[in-house]
Image 1 (cartoon, rainbow, N blue to C red):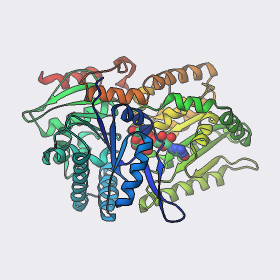
Image 2: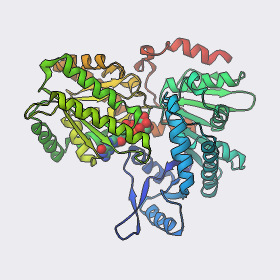
Image 3: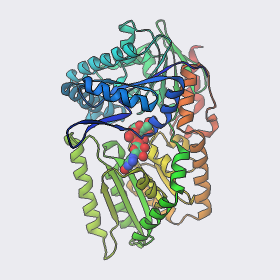
Image 4: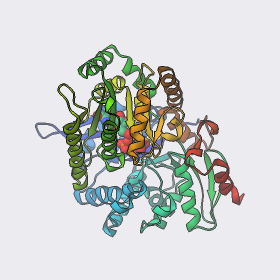
Amino acid sequence: MDSTRLVVVSNRLPAALRKNENGDWKVVPGAGGLVTAMAPVLRDRGGTWIGWSGTAGGAEVMDLLASFSKEAGYELKPVGLTAEEVNDFYFGFANEVVWPLFHDFQSRCNFNPRYYHRYMDVNRKFAETVGQWSAEGDFVWVHDYHLMHVGWWLKELGINRRTGFYLHIPFPPVDIFLKMPWRTKVLKALMEYDLVGFQTYRDRRNFIQCLKLFYSDVKAKGRGPVVRISNDERTFNAGYFSIGIDYRQFNETARRPSVKKRAQAIKEADENRTIILGVDRLDYTKGVPQRLEAMRTLFENYPELHGKITFTQVLVPSREQVPEYMALKEEIERLVGEINGQFSQPGYTPVQYMYRSLPREELVAYYRAADMALVTPLRDGMNLVAKEYCACNVSKKGVLFLSEFAGAATQLQNGALLVNPYDVEGVAKAIHQAYHMDDKEKRQRMRKMQEIIRKYDIFWWVDSFLQAGVSRGLGDFPPQESVDYAFFEMGEDYIDDSLSSGT
Ligand code: GDG
């Protein structure tokens, strides 16, 4: 690969600015998968990360980030946002329009025109910052639904850069996307990137179908993970690159003696019962109430499992300022209370619930201790928790229940037990079956998943996107046959024929 300089653009910087007890700002580095994967690439190639600092900006913030940049080995450049901008762009357009619509929750959308106008203004601000801190020849990699118009703005402002965009959340089917009042503007904006990346084949297909509906002259050429799309005005690439995790790091952490000890303590505290684990951000897309209903159904339909299984739900606080999220939290807590009220016995609490973020090692200890993981989002771009659980399953006897509607299902369908999260009886039945599954089958399934997750990890994801975007080449993609879409797709042939119709 060449050594093109890289500029990463995301809503938040990979380090947060927080005030300490004395009221002074301090920089707290981020530790997520994206930062882990991007940091070495940015250091090697030289690069810059642009994002909102969590503040309105100012000289003090610039100074703090400059000293942090020195340590990190790449530049961090902030975009300052006012409280109004955060409200209308972030809480408004990003999280009351795009987030619900793209996750198929159209009835939760608030299509307030003010939100869209502010979204455009803020995307312009981001593009101006990109112009300020990058040079022609750099590759600008824009992340996620907050920033779909940055590429378009770069062109409007006459800032000539090679650009790529990656959507971490799903791209909705045509019928749902049509509801968006600014639908053609969004499509046009996405077409301005040189490469548009999605999580799965299905997302890319939905995107192309939307393009074809609005632009009758759009042609999609090619059969692989990356296809070339063109019409009279534009030619660009669209591909699917399923995001992975830092498998090795999760696996090594899970094997640490301190984590092993902690996992044993978690098991013993639960009197060695079968532990089923759920880990999610507080969000209506994650299907937590439905999951709790499935647990209630399990205890109702299979009384022999009383006292033998416990369900532990870790719920990480998120978007707490939004009333809907607080209502969801209350609903979840009501359900936890009801189920425990119904099935608790002396020394046995069937549902254990934590509303907080766990330190990374503690989370890994829970992953290791859990006999089963219930990952049942109603819709999810990928879902990293599913992959992290498998990476930490040292015994290889863990069972993953995975929603058909998580992007991860396309990769893990041969090892996971796929479930429809709305079908609470079906989920309960799957858990009952897994409880009686023999260890040999469990190990076979877990091995298959671990192999895929280890091979197509976060570093593969960065490389494959950059190969397609910067070098215009293709790396080692999962072979087509390892991703069998027949489960909920119309079939690969049908789709590829429609894509290559204009060749
Ligand atoms: C978006 C898309 C896509 C969770 N609890 C704790 C904790 N976590 C970490 C997990 C995991 C991350 O949060 C959650 O990632 P997900 O992928 O499950 O979900 P989103 O936040 O919705 O992410 C999603 C992803 O982007 C990447 O493209 O997969 O579909 O919605 O990494 O480990 N971390 C710690 N304590 C916790 O209690 N330390």
